[in-house]
Amino acid sequence: NQDQDLAGKRVLVTAGPTCESIDPIRYITNHSSGKMGYSIAEAAQKRGATVVLVSGPTHIEPPLNVEVIQIKSALEMYEAVLRQYENQDMVIKAAAVGDYRPALKADQKIKKSDDELVIQMVKNPDILLELGKRKKQQVLVGFAAETMNMLSYAKGKLEKKNLDLIVANNVTENGAGFGGDTNIVYLINRSGKTIKIEKSSKLEIAHQILNEAKTYL
Ligand code: PMT
Image 1 (tube, rainbow, N blue to C red):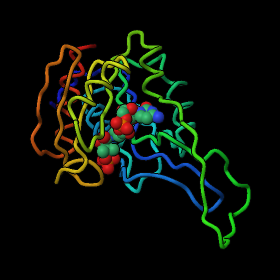
Image 2 (cartoon, helix red, strand yellow):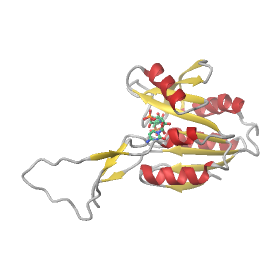
Image 3 (spheres, protein in one colour):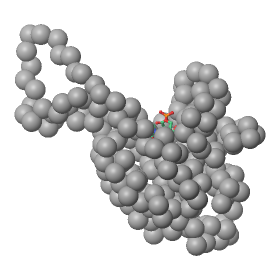
């Protein structure tokens, strides 16, 4: 795995959660630690690629020799990714992007009252869907974080978003998904070929994803 098989290739990876502000104090986010995406960035860099990592807020160290672009919200991730997209040979979207954001961000702290608080949410753009529409030479790899019907939902996303490969994980399974150092995934390609990767470190899974994705370069 460690040879320079991605030398001369440009790889963009997204990682971590997005944070959607409610007011200057509060936000809505998810459980992504960034580990899966950072492992992919590390693996691609070690294999010789020039790597850009677009990352939501995390508590982990970015890999060495990788350009890191820090963002907070899904809209910021959308802008950063689209700005880089044209030059990339491969894009791997491991980030857990918020599907919705509060319709309004209050300028001041929302004060507690005796009433219930209702926060209206509006849809964020689907970054990966947009990349699929604008796809030219880029190999496009998405993730699917599911809690049920994993393979059928993942195949639906593969087709709808015009991907070459999708990495499906059942985030309710022990040893898989958010936070930990391991994952359990299925790699599904365009022709429906499905490979199960038993519980392995996120770094090992990163290498397997790259092995499969590079066949589309
Ligand atoms: O960060 P870790 O703690 O290591 O956890 C890893 C992980 C569970 C976050 C990772 O393995 C994973 O599953 N990432 C994808 C999470 C997700 O948002 O899945 P989704 O099924 O909701 O989205 C499908 C794909 O569309 C993803 O590639 C996502 O990046 C992309 N997407 C989703 C919504 C949106 N508005 N824009 C997008 O680009």
